[in-house]
Length: 280
Image (cartoon, rainbow, N blue to C red; front, top):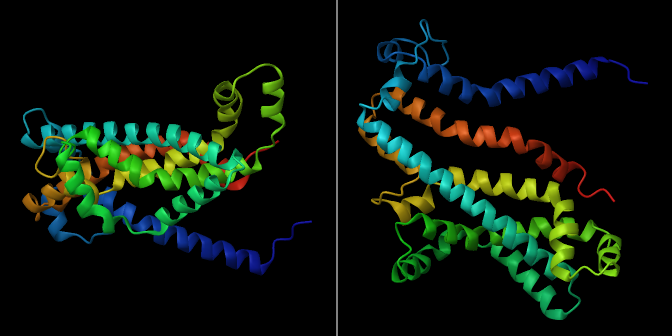
């Protein structure tokens, strides 16, 4: 029977204080984006706005504003690159992991270990040869090129996550489907993959967060092109609006909205992936 003790009260206080500390940057981000320019200079960062206004967002997103075109183009690039990267990582990662886990040959185990090594290696070590190779085949400065680069960089992580789920999946489903005459491809697409919902949610959210928030890779491969993602666009705004923090914070808040919406819709699968995995 649960008893509410002093220790429970103390733990609740610690959890509440930790939550407030974690939410403080988000509070400053929201309140600053709702303050007019004069109030930024005269009030504390954590102080709520005296007269909240959406003027900063209107200034950035107004059709007559020069910034609106850059923000919308950056938002479109981020959406295309993130969606394309997730789709490829889910497709390639699930098939690769399934083959590696179900295969009994030696090469499959060695190949899986190579994927694990690729997770440990810092991505920055391969940026220079990757940039040279991408430039030679015309992938620098294009959204397709960025999607292909993210496939290569994040595929080991997707394979590692899917492999953990495939190990827990009983072979009974596959054997029953094969007895009914299904081909190996039909077994994977119609029986195995639908059971991988928690794994797919985990891969999609982790890869989506990494790709959406990535600044370094787009800065190297997309800087100066028309396909710049939103983090690179924000970086350029910091340079031109260095004294207008209300506008900068408004841009940051705009960039957070799509990925937060995606997380809200996919969090159920994400939590299932970490808590329960596959239920046979």
